[in-house]
Image (cartoon, rainbow, N blue to C red; front, side, top):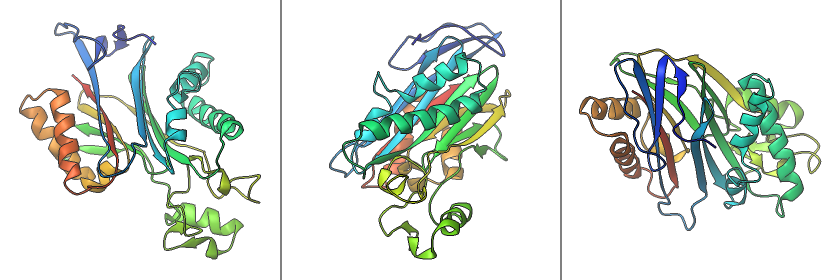
Length: 290
């Protein structure tokens, strides 16, 4: 992993990772990327979220992983030997498109995890962000999310992720098409699991079941980055539950106009979300396109 390496992004670009490297000086021809992360255990006994962000050559990457049933799977996704982002980057370097790299890395990681798991009832959702060649790429499974926030007051955000729960129409149709509607009760899969795509959760996947009730196939989306795009945020499920998308965008935009540093904005956003999401782990990676 290389931190603070120059990027060919717009014209000349530098990157600063808060807590990892100092801010690079930049003249008027540069656009600087900064990133920071904040996390809080909340009222839970354990912290089951993990996150990562950094640079690899000319590629910026970030990931947020929201574990459930324990932190085994979310830890696996950031472990040096099995880190998901490393496999994604390796696939990109091999010549795959970023979207192809996302899908291949998710599948291979879940297969590797299935051979190493000592329990079948743990899992993790995921959201991954890649910035490469002026394009923002996002992949996610479950209810970890990502959005881009604009400078403008109108149409000031775009959600790039897709929520995967048993009650979502497309997921409900997929599950009940292969199994009776009894599989979903009050939005829960077999009255136990409230997501339908995740790493792990092998009790709900082949060969333990006749069909894959839970998938590890990511939703992917890309966006050509323009000067109007100011922030990218990747977050665990507890954050948008506590502060809605529009409120997140407005919260960040106002503080950006006040000139607050990115680490202060991230911490204040987490504090605001904590007011209405008292018990959940909260994690966010905030990226600023300066």
